[in-house]
Amino acid sequence: MNKKTFDRIKKILCMFTLVFFVSSLTAASASAGSNNEIKWKNEKNQWDKEKIGWEKELKQWQTEKLKWESEKTKWENEKKEWDKKDKNCNEYKAWLNNYNTWLNKYSSWETKYEVWVVSYNSWIVEYEVWVVSYNSWVSSN
Image (cartoon, rainbow, N blue to C red; front, side, top):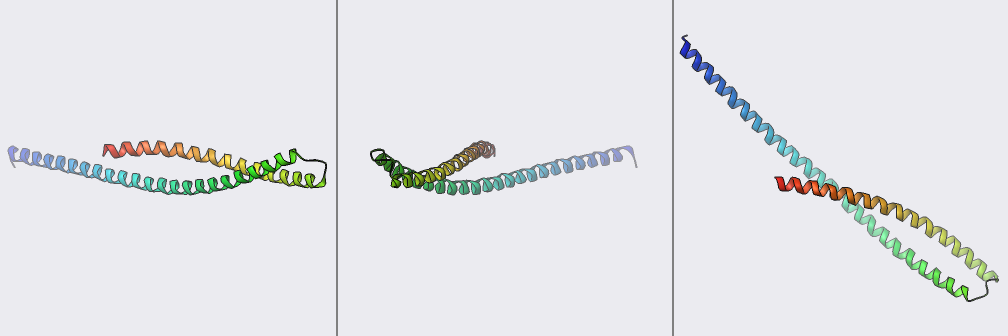
C-alpha cells in the first residue's frame, strides 16, 4: 500500500470515529432529557397526590374546628348564665365538672390541631419551593 492510500483510510476512519462519537453523545443527551422529563412527571404526580391528601385532611380539620367552636360557644353561653346564678348548688357543681371535662377534651383537640397546622404549613412551603423548581424546568424546555 502506498502512503496516499493509507492516509485516506486513516482520514476516513477518523471521520467515522468522530461521527460515531457525536451521534452517541447526541443520543445520550436525548436519552438523559427524556429521563429528566420522566423524573419531573413522576415528582409532579407524587406532589399532586400529596396535595389532594393534605386538602382532604384540611377539610376534615376545618369541619371539626367548626364543631368544636360551636360547642365552645354553647359552653361559654351557659357559663355566662351560671355567672348570674347561685354557684353553691349541686346542679352548678355537676355542670362545672362537665364543663371542665369538655374543656380538657377541647384543649387536647386544639393542641393536636395546632400541631397539624404546623405540619401543613411546612408542607405548603416545601410544595411552593418545588413548584418554583418545576416551573423553571418547564420554562427551560
